[in-house]
Length: 73
Figure 1: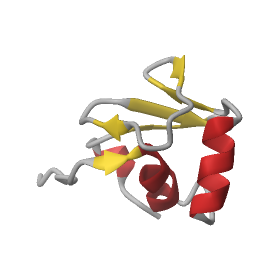
Figure 2: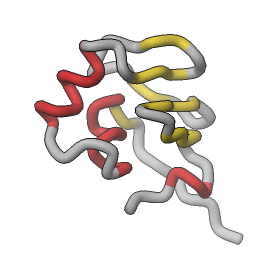
Figure 3: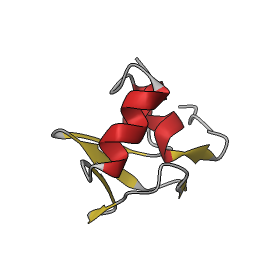
Figure 4: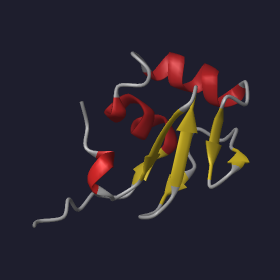
């Protein structure tokens, strides 16, 4: 089995990569409104740098950065 290695990614880029938002503007808005959690805490910085193993949640969807279930759409 081959793991997927991701380059360091900012939170707003991750939301777009996952297909959870359509645009960077939508990502920015949802992050600033407190709709996104990283590792169980609300994250309001769109430039927050994600690390492998971080858990990101938006609208009931959850993904672990760097895991197999983090594959894009």
